[in-house]
Image (cartoon, rainbow, N blue to C red; front, side, top):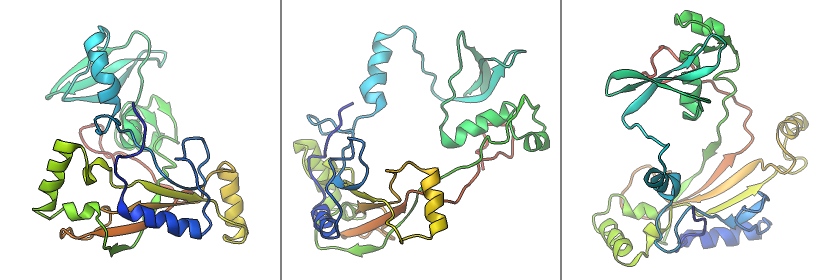
Length: 277
């Protein structure tokens, strides 16, 4: 996977850089060296030659499918349940392909990688999770683990949106002239707004002494590494636009990186075809 900066930066980001520098944010180097404090343009998984986004699929999976004889991918297939033997060793999974259920066995191990929402769901429908909750749904309990689906944390982000006099991605939406022109510019020359993902400038800072209550600061210090930022600031130009009207907008967004709020992922069905709640 190639990692680098977009061919074109957002026009508003240069002004954000000047503003944050004036506020005392030190210059970072893309946040790729382990230091998360400061301000910087950020890197993306973009091929510098084709100026196209890269993913695990485009960079690894397609080649592996062509060259490997031990990799199979089943499309339109949903995992229904993890299978176990009498010693509670995972032996495979039950899946559904276009409504037809069948089983896939594992010689060594089953790797659970269904995402932050679906992973706890799959564990619970397989009998791993809080016993009282599984009992209510009639799911046989294989392992009573109260922490499954608990302690969910997410970044809280907000920011005002204002019109600007420089070019931004928001003008492409709802404008029958600018979007076709941008697509043509990208397809023919690999230039223009579409070479930029839409957010290319970040800043991070840690709370300063006296900024938070002593008890709050102590809780943060106990829960996160010493160099973990408390706040992040993101230059966005198409995320919080209330209504796309083909004009240029910008949002200087702030995100809380150390939230105290906690959420849960639960289920109301023993069928993974029903989304978790």
